[in-house]
Amino acid sequence: MNDNDRDKYRQRTDQHYELEGVYYTPSNEANRRQPRTQRQSQISDRDSIHRKQAQSKKNQNGKQSRGRSSQKSQLSVYYIVALLVSVSVCVAAVAILINSFASGGGNNAPVDPGQLPSLPVIGSEEDDNATFTNIVAVVISASEGAGGVEVVDVYTETTHRITVDAGTRMSDRFDRPLVLEEFSPGNIIDISFNENTSVIRTMRINVLAWERRLVRNVRVDAAASTITLGNDVFRFGPDTVTNSRGQHLDIARISGIDLLNVRGYRDKAWHIELVSGSGVIEVRNTAAIRNGTIEIGTNVLHALEDVEDIEILAGYHRVVVRGDNIELFVEEIEVIEGERQVLDLSRARLLNGVLEITSNVTGFRAYVDGIEVSLLAPIPLEFGEYSLRVVLDGHEPYETQVIINSEIIRVHATLNRIINMGNLIIETTPIGASVFIDDIFRGNSPVTIPLEYGGYMLRVTLPEHQEREMFVEISDREHRINFSLFLLEDLWLD
Image 1: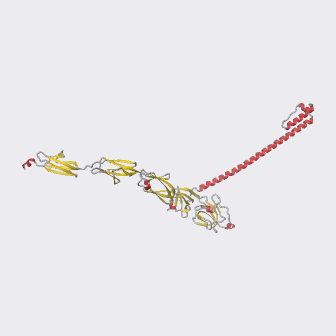
Image 2: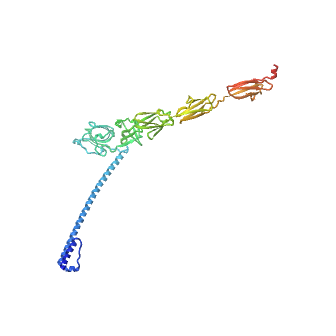
Image 3: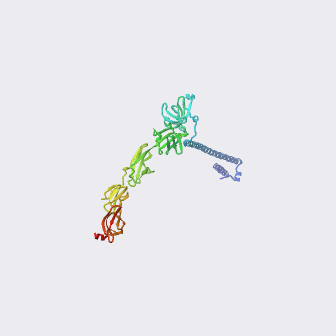
């Protein structure tokens, strides 16, 4: 290969490397061998390639920059959406908090009916010249047609009969649309109505009305027209709406265990709803059950001796009665609101045992609760407590209380013989005679000898005097005998 071919090959190789991004730097000797114009051309070509590569890199950087700008834009949209959602949640939370404070009790600040928030009006142009009245009222009745809504102003307690037309706007406390059927007696509402036509322009659930749901232990004072919920006392009046399952409720029927919903405004209860009423279980025939208890449900326990009437919520209740002398008594009772159900415990099955009586004597008689019983066999008795009396003539009676609480109860009656005592008084003339009872010396006369009731042989002796002997029956507390003893010599002279 000659020098010209070698230079051509080197030129092609250099351009090839430059296009591939690899730059070839020729040696000084090669530069000297190249013509000046050729070297300038190569330098120009190399600069052109460098410019193209720089422009390409710039374009790539521009694309990357535009990509990053697009990503930043998407993140901005995401942050804006998240911010809007957060603001909405906060607004809802504040509304709920305000609502809970408004419903918490009857001490709400008074609201001027003339400053009720206005709502958009959908009505005829005639309303522009009409006079509108704004009131806070309780719904007495709501139905379609003329005179469709009857309300009572909570401030003046006056009754208004007003109507709803196509232009009436109805909403709940959060300004969500409602229809007339969704307003029920007892709702406390803000109303704006045309005084001339009695047509309602706006009708909305009041945000400051309070409500107590599912409360019990309520105390009603009909004389004072007050109802006590916990520590709060509220008034009620003839316009207060009271109902139970859509029917009118006599407020005097409310018991402390009833379950109620109560709505009101400020210090007055305007709606009292009986959610679950109560009835009475009357318990009968408990005397035969010893140490009896009655359990209703899972946590109502009473001693039978203290029970006559049990007030309890309406519904089905499981009644369990236990006693020392009965089998377990279980019954399901349906308690009906305002009614009395009878639980007759005479149907409880009494447990049975037998009584065996023995004694230290024979021929005795036995009485159980004052009734003589046969002693030929053990005495069958129901579980319980009984009085037992065992008697025999001439013996002290045996008395005790017997508890039958097992199959066999044995009683041993010890009868003690009755000892009646009397005094035998012996007097003699002259005195000093020896007195013998059944040949036993008992003293010198005069003498008093205590003896049991019965018969005895009495003998009286005195030296040189007549001996006397006789049979004596002691049957009372005192028996007196006086003997005159004669000298034997006088008897012989006779």
